[in-house]
Amino acid sequence: MNIQVGDIGHIIQLAIAPVFLLTGVCTNLVVLTNRLARIIDRSRVLEDRLDIGYSDAYLNELDVLYRRSHLINVSITLSTACGLLICLVIAMLFWGDITNISLDKYIAGMFVVAMLALIGSFYYLLREIFIASAAMRAHRHVRRPAK
Image 1 (cartoon, rainbow, N blue to C red):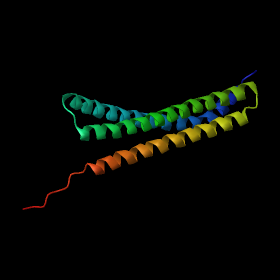
Image 2 (image 1 turned 135 degrees about the horizontal axis):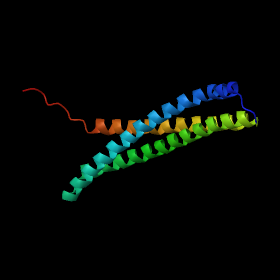
Image 3 (image 1 turned 30 degrees about the horizontal axis):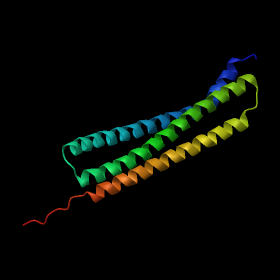
Image 4 (image 1 turned 180 degrees about the vertical axis):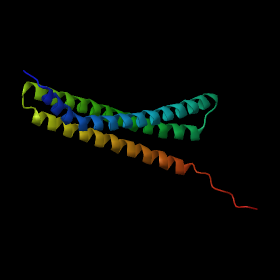
């Protein structure tokens, strides 16, 4: 196993694209965790209000928040799995090139699974956004006509 400087440069060139993808996945995780934090904050406020007095409106909103938090949690799980798989792809690129072991099929397979996880993450994020938008429209106040 005699590694030359040119070989390392070639390996780094191969790993650049997945690293940029990993940056995008991390940005997606930031968005997802911020959305989850806002859902948790709102649910705590509603639960505190429910401790004071019963309200069907608060319970209905909590139900929507629980559905949204479940979807966001699934999306976070899928994005994290995608990030892990991309890291494994990068590691396998280095490992395969250093050891001259043919890992092409494994790398391609892991990359495809990573993309499926990312697609799933975006799908669940989109579902959560649709639920949030529908709930917002349902609670919209109507303007009163001017007198």
